[in-house]
Length: 122
Image (cartoon, rainbow, N blue to C red; front, side, top):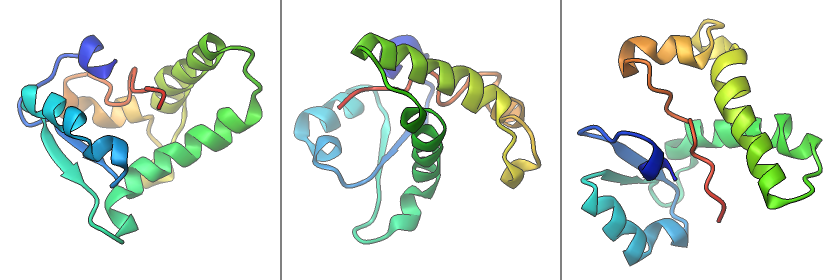
């Protein structure tokens, strides 16, 4: 979904853990066909994926665990709202000086939001 909805710039890095879905030959071929740099956590090193883990913790504790979704479409709509509105625009993490992520990233991303439309069910 992210590949379909966003412009991919040179040097885009896809970082993941060592899950089989990210190591599959089809997935790797897709990333390579888009000239995306593949970055995978080192075996046994949880710090490589700390930022993604932090995001997933926020998603689970602030959205998913608080809701009972009726349908897949309901889950998708609520999770996309959390990512695009709450996570990127309303949360004020202390680690970045209590700024919204969209404001913190603006000088580096020309306004594009890195987590927008990233929800892809497995």
